Length: 129
Image 1 (cartoon, one colour):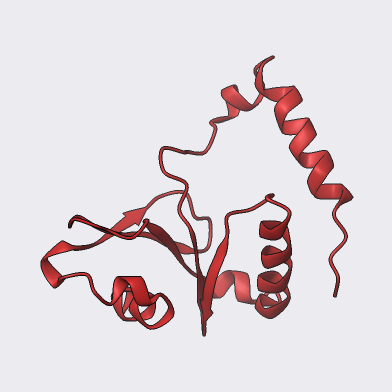
Image 2 (cartoon, one colour):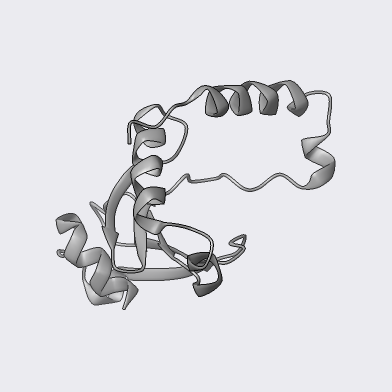
């Protein structure tokens, strides 16, 4: 399923040989299922993240509005690029080598100012819709 979604939205993945196509589960989603999609072949397209929305989130989130706001955040470089949407999810740019901070890291003297600046930028953002 993940492969067919990616291939339908991103033409560069249609050329990837079946043996070179990899779908890897990513941890960290609270209600969403997350998958890294990549190719191990030569001239491989950049990896992407496939986010499949969880049913629990559907009860409290307007997914259409969420995708519109996410796209605007991406334009402001406050979120990964939005590469495509499908019925119950979206495909995003994958940030290679990144991970979530653990609570202790969030509270470090180095990270608190960085987090505050990013939160200020996000809270200053006003969606167009």
